[in-house]
Length: 372
Image (cartoon, rainbow, N blue to C red; front, top):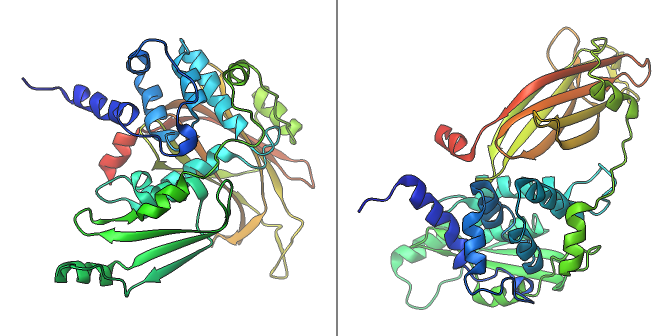
């Protein structure tokens, strides 16, 4: 009997959810999620594909047992969307501010791990990728070239020289303490690095629970529907976007590239350029020149997916007649699909403004991988 591609893909997706042991000790269930023996498996099977991928890939390393249980008990796509929004909200240091976004940093790490550590396995699934996603870049890395295990063959010795062992050092990791080291040795038959067995025990001590959030099922349920609106700094620019007001006093352009993160999420990497003829005086960049930017991404239904505020104040030589261009960069994790992108900016000195609205097509993981 032959199996369809969709059946095989679904089986591979369900495997880490059903069979994998918890990545960290804190993920071990503290209470039963379902009364029925196969309740969790049945709930996972009923999830839409993107929701299953979100559990199995996007948040596999960081979701708590209580959060996973609460997610599996939701019944509608709207509830799941609200839950996912609040999942990231709970992990933001200052949730009412737009200055730092845990979610964006998490997906940046996934993309970096894919690009840096990918091989037979997708980068974030490797041992080095897992540590990078959890804790970010190490404070230092030592390469060890003189290690050789007893009984290693000559070709393994050559691999050791070509792929020296790595020691990653972190000054501090919550739950583990200060001066933390992870050791990775190259495994020839896997063509990849493996985390040393003793370090697996160290990893289990890590505390990834959000500081502001007490893990109880009741709290999680509250967070599904409750939230505090984020503070908007550039309210005049927000008004341009909400009112769909067209302004072309400030000319700017934007360029977007896409990076595959997981099957559920693609990272849109956006660069905004504003030609600035007044940014230099006698070949010196004027430091006070800046343009606040307001960016909003929404679904065709009007549901706001993300709001970002930043400032274009980095002057670079654009090799054009204007000489200099102010630039700003932002990364936005998005589910593949169609969105509306709105950008508004202004000259902070003169008050002149510019805005645009355009459609944004976010490609899927499969289409991005096919191009590589």
